[in-house]
Length: 158
Image (cartoon, rainbow, N blue to C red):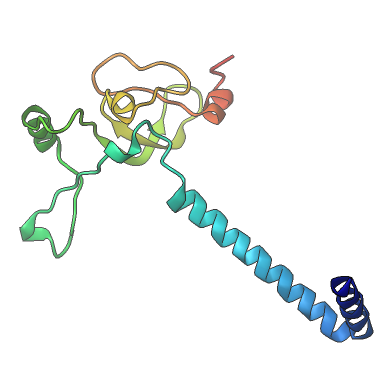
């Protein structure tokens, strides 16, 4: 009973002082919204597991070349080293190359600049997934994994 009485008293006090009430409600709203936004970021980036099968078993390897480490602290692994490591490293179940970048699509209508990656053919197998749309291209170097928006825009997946 005392809680309800205190609640009525607080409501009457807030209604009597609109100059205090409006900023107080605004600050509460901003505080709750900010807290919610920060939690969403932390949850999505740090707390949720990566969308791969067994993400704790995935590692990223980069090279350090002491003579140029001042300019380039780390570099992507070059193809020769990748081939040698894949042959001689029994501790790793599989290795794959992933080099993101901008690619040009030509020969299929109007030329288009795409965000993509150059990957080795076993990338999806190593990461524990599969292509979303389409199928792997023939050859050892180029599996295709076009996103749904690209496929709809280019007329694939009809």
